Image (tube, rainbow, N blue to C red; front, side, top):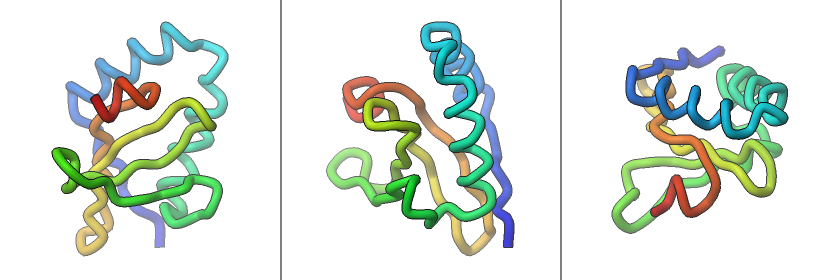
Length: 92
């Protein structure tokens, strides 16, 4: 069952800024979103729940350096990306 990706205006601004700074990651970023929509539990995404001040969020990996934090609403089959960037940007 495919999931619905729901993009907020604030996330879209963050994603555009991220892709401007890292144009070499456009293909990996698009692949991550496509895989997330098809199967958020795919092992290559390394989906995991966060703790502390981000305990309501999950994280997936674009590559070893960059992540996307997101709300994963399994009941409604929706995924809402919240932030994208390196470790310090998304967890800071």
